[in-house]
Amino acid sequence: MSNIKNWSTTPSNNDDDPPHGAPEGWAVDDVNLVVRQQMADHRTQWEDAQWFN
Amino acid sequence: MSNIKNWRVTASDNTSAAPAGAPEGWAPSAVNNTIRQQMADHRTQWQEAPWFDWGHVLVQTGTQAFRVSISNTVASTIYTAGRRLKMVDGGVTIAGEVVATSASGSNTIVSVSSSNLSASLSSGSISIFDPGSVTWPVASKMDMYTDTITSSVNSAKLVTPAALKHHVGVAKAWGYVAYSVTGSNYTLINSWNVLSVTSTITGLVNVYFQTSISDSTGPDFKPIFGSGHGPEGSPSPYIFSAPGFNSPSYFTAYLYKPATGSLGDSSFTFVVYGLLESP
Image (cartoon, rainbow over all chains, first blue to last red; front, top):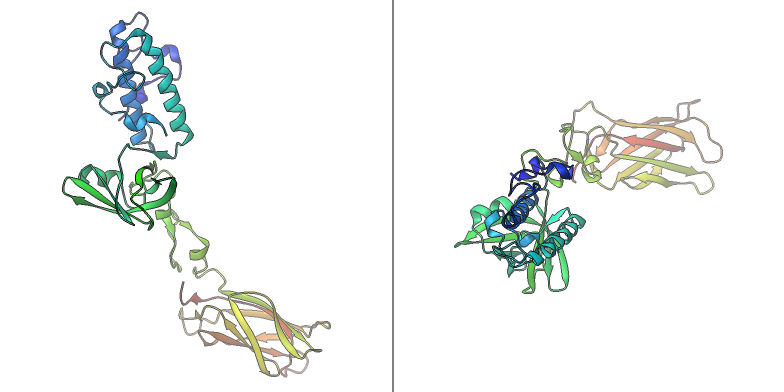
């Protein structure tokens, strides 16, 4: 199940700790982890695209 | 084609060099490039949203089959029967649907409805809608009646026109037959499922069907209705009677003059119910 179910449509609310969000003041070395996680989340969602949680 | 086909569902595997991934120790100056690339990939994917390329390499094994290098255990959950495919074969896009999968060692052979796959086959996208899903979000081809239906109808299924014509509640033939005094003959003006009309006896007209009709729903079930209009140009009510089918291929209309009760030539309209004998 994709983690997109936990994302908010309000950008400022997507501030969970990495890799599931992009909070203020996050560490530079967390950026790649967030990007990778989002790639995985999107891929997972497309593999089950007829349904959305 | 979106590059999402190359993304992995395991986050730590998305380590391709920027902009295709987010590797450890990447340069700060590469971050924006990866984000831009991902914006483009998302946009591309959404522009073709009914389809998703799983990133499989399709190797043609026959005119109606290809091989993918994943196990049948996995492939059978992706290439489900009836799922639509859009395959790239050289410079040609070939549409089709999955028929079945079968194991071929550690690989899988996918047989498809298309019959013109060539050695140039390379990749393909799969419909995001899976008709094999138990509860499908929209009615699919699999949820349609495409063959004969009679009196039993599942209200959850769609009905194609080709199937609807078989339902017992739908007319199986109808027509308007004109009788011309001048020409002394009968002419089929407008109709559905009527091949021809002939008359050799005054007031008796044989109506032949294109597709035969049965009244097998019961010996007393004679679902032929009509009305006589009198000869063309001088319309007056005539009595129409059709006691049943002479055979599955035709019935005889009897037309009576109302004043005398004797047979007489007349234009008439009719509608027939019953069961079409073949799809």
